[in-house]
Length: 302
Image (tube, rainbow, N blue to C red; front, side, top):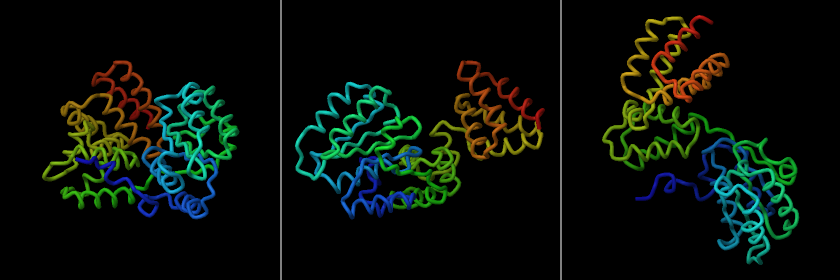
């Protein structure tokens, strides 16, 4: 059975979700066939790799395309051997295309070597570098690339796409479950599809089933708890938290859910408080009392 993430990967720009400005700029490159080195930057699951593959498939033949994941081979050796060797080869296409995913994980030495290859073989090789964190890319590489920024997909875009895919796959899902998937995937379409994949076969997909299968507390309960916490209603907070704790979720997943909620609210003070507890839990101090302490501290500071 084909994975959903592969089955619904767009083959052309008309089917890429969101990021209209980026897609328009890339569509123009396809029309003119005038491609510079490019740097795609933005959060995961926003269409960067898919867009790079669409560009490559339209401008070069298969043997003139090299795709690498820099997180697997992040050192200078892959630059000296694999990338340089490919750049030196003759090609049937006007130019070869090298797609380098997760380029921000490359070492400084590897990036310096890459910059030299980009300069030496600019006449017959084009690079598409893909990263999540723009600032981790060596400045001399940034200056040699057209930077294309991809933004996180909106909740509306994700909701529409998830509902459409579920309809095509014959999956019975309610809006509450869709919203839970959107919260857990944090704007990442690929992660949304991975969650959907784990739900295939269920007769009715509900919020509770999504939470249970993914091992994450209900986002609705977390939101309700934080609402009560910010009202200083500790009695209600403990009742909600105890119901979450009794479901035996991993404390790491529970505190991650709190941090995600704080982040969604853009509440810096809440993020800071939750972050301290998150650190303690990551160090193995993960008793129920850690959460009670967190709630008391937040309540005291309100």
